[in-house]
Length: 324
Image (cartoon, rainbow, N blue to C red; front, top):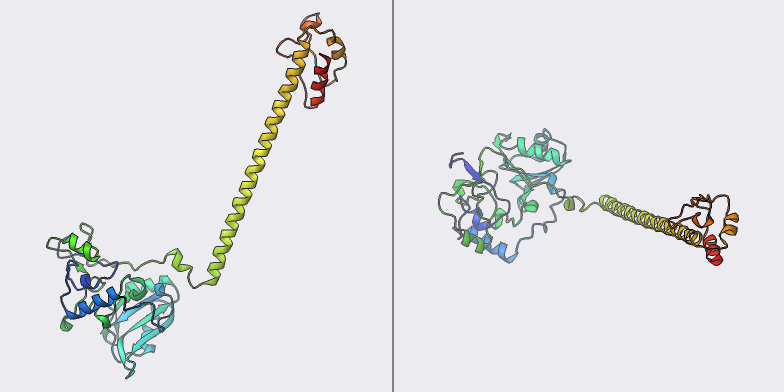
């Protein structure tokens, strides 16, 4: 990529940077830029304070350099080629009512807006070549309009060119970049080594999930329903975990109880006790006794040879201990 074709675009608006051809100026070069800096630093401009601005900014495009004779119906017919036009506002002078030469067009979907953004740029309406851009008033941080000394683009005849936008991007700097001064003024430095060609179309901002849920009670309700469903799932999962732990605890208790019963029987039968024979005769049928030799003292050695079923209860072990 040659240095003459290397450009970059601004993600946020700064009046001093917008007045620089390479985005490295640290001082305002004309009174309009100075006025824009004052409006920006003092917070005199509210991009959301215009009551005429309504609609979805992610579905809206700016159409500039229109003929002063272009009417709403002509513009609507031209924009319908790229999608369904939901709303159109041709900006007019509040005193004379004449067209100011630019308009805002809102489409039904974001996809249709992007199609108009890509294809309608530099198209002709009433023999005038128009420019199309995304809705920077709401979507570009720090935006200052042209009437306050900001804006983007412009013509050389006006003497107030503004760079960083789609029509006039920043050029790659040919001089050392003053990083310290830019950082002090809060100006983002040029993306050194990450430039694009001037023929690449910059992508407009995409909708974020938080923004998509604004101004929509249905989506708010869906979000609450999802949160409640997630909470219910977590609660059910916790209940299942508690039940599983309780089942494991009960099973471990049963195993310990069974081992305790086996130890009790083996201890009794492995001793030389005169009551062993009478005890063996009283054992239930569920208990099997293995005789190792003819002597009763070896009926159950230290490691029990008795096999017990789950029907043996703690009372049996207690009775065995009572016989000792």
